[in-house]
Image 1 (cartoon, helix red, strand yellow):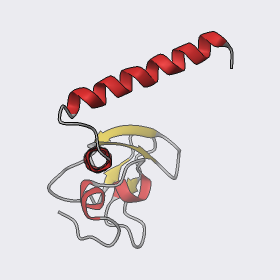
Image 2 (spheres, helix red, strand yellow):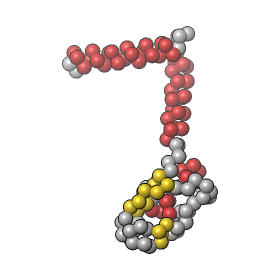
Image 3 (cartoon, rainbow, N blue to C red):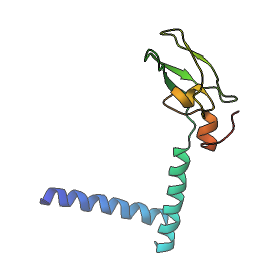
Image 4 (tube, helix red, strand yellow):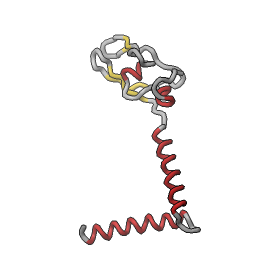
Amino acid sequence: MDAEREKQALQEKLVRCRILLSEFPEGVTAKNLNDLADELERKILALDRVMQSLSVITCPHCQCQATETMPTNACQFFYDCAGCGKRLKPLPGDCCVFCSFGTVPCPSMQEDGKGASCG
């Protein structure tokens, strides 16, 4: 590592140390850091669970794609393709057309996972 990169890495560490010291004026302990790490992990997991409302449906017949807003209060059982006009229905085992043909599963599946019941 050249001197300039090493200096930059040390400056970044110094900034992180100063931030930690400002967050824990009573002193930094392993418990403080573990508690902070746990809180950050919880926040990251919560952000991962943010409900997505848009999904791109791809027609299996003509490959036409359309971005659609998913209903949040019920599953959508039918979808009429704008490209070929065919009516799409969920595949066996799926609750709706978004779970079968969309890039994002429906809100019920996002919230409760596979095997959940819809809306």
